[in-house]
Image (cartoon, rainbow, N blue to C red):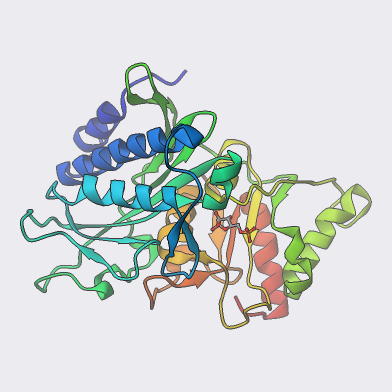
Length: 339
Ligand code: P6P
């Protein structure tokens, strides 16, 4: 039985007893957790607050912003800009990086986030979430530039998400496995409810948007066709399918019971490697999955080894149960296909 300690105590013990995180990173993560609590309050208001529906603006991705996208983004910026832990932030909702204003002390960390992932589900009351990733600012030069963010996922010092679902649950890794914290609304704090999460290496459950099937390349088509063939096919077992269209919710399910999640390259936009963003979706989720014993690739190489060239670059994502991810990746290898 996991001892129900607070998020703060967990971080203090990671700092003091395990030497995993320095004080400044601990304080940063506590600020992010508090911001997620405030976002949860706004999300939970629904139609009772003026938070539903779309704003009259588009984000850098050209996507119409939901009011809650903007609220979540502003909440994370306001919570993090004054603390002295950060040098700058980057968000799916902002084209350029956000430098900590000069009136505040500059810190040594870079925070990246998708403030509200899955926001197409907001108006239909389906789970959504905040995804975050923490990097260290490179030393040796004054100021902060966008290029400082362009580090591979293997350089992350912390990564996690907060899922706003039937429970509000914060999931975190600092490189010592994956821990989950459930928001206790009576005391207003996150409480450790699971740790040392392990993803089963095999699964019978895949997550992919099947409506794109005609656009996939051959290795993905082969893998899904084999799953659909069931116990009489080459896999010798029947598969189930789930697709929530909210990466946070699909990844959370995989952390809880296994599975494979795929958003692969497809020929609709051949020059784009995929839909999902590397820096603040695939990298944090990829590290969490690896820390829980799973795998995360772009079809050809480990997600965390991809060297970023642009802040908002996209990537194909295949992550989850190790043996299934390796199978799909081997099919790509056989086909010599692009990622
Ligand atoms: P589709 C949400 O917009 C998102 O970025 C991920 O959270 C999710 O997995 C994916 O896109 C859903 O994409 O094309 O199925 O709507």
